[in-house]
Image 1: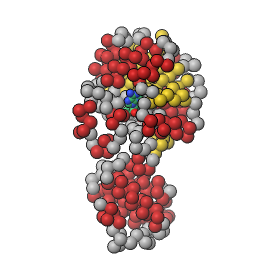
Image 2: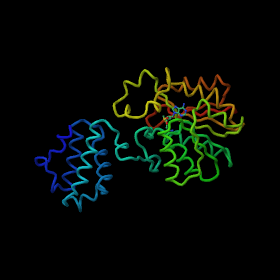
Image 3: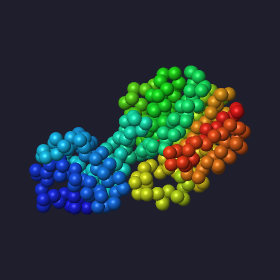
Image 4: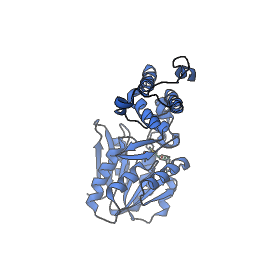
Length: 299
Ligand SMILES: C[S@@+](CC[C@H](N)C(=O)[O-])C[C@H]1O[C@@H](n2cnc3c(N)ncnc32)[C@H](O)[C@@H]1O
């Protein structure tokens, strides 16, 4: 397909202006029905040329450097081949923070902001010197945004199994200069490192897609790691692990906060209820979809 994009005035990209190459990128994505073609082409344009959209007003007629044009067209080509734009530019925004991402780590979703915001609300009710554990931490989106909002006081540990994701987690923690403990562990074993009743908040956005549904996901999502998506046969495997292995680690006042997939609210609440938790609430996202379950023992 490369030949298609390299064709510019008969294979010659010499003399192409910023405005022309920007429009070329938009049209290539639009013609292939890429949903967010405008945003995606702009993100790649900004990344590649270091220019914002508004800069086109002044610099639009300037000739774009040839090497950067080639690089931009390569990025467009990757997008046409189904790579998520965040992987192509190497970073994304989550709760106003810039996080590095790439192949091997889940791209944090806006939906997960509901988990962070509701968890922080609960934490603020509990006081200071708290211990928080972010399970299945991925890029560190949850742990990092919570730590940057809550400041020094809570001790936060981020646990992640994937070595590839762990690299991004470490880089993001360093990038934002935060004091977060990192554990390279399986959620099914990591609990052994904590004393009973020592954790005030377990927060987790686990893989929650039922195994059989993964092959039907759109091609962009399928470029993300299988390990980050597959929640076992019914998608609920990780909620059971949290209940079986981690709940005994919760302090008296402690709580668990988990993100859930569409339609999983009732089943996840049942899993917590069967373990004796009485105070269980479900929170919706801006699309009115149940997105977060917060569960405590006490009323
Ligand atoms: C849905 S992603 C969430 C990532 C991140 N918390 C976020 O919200 O963007 C789930 C994460 O769980 C990790 N994971 C999968 N199986 C795991 C396991 N057995 N133990 C620990 N982490 C696991 C995956 O590698 C992935 O990073």
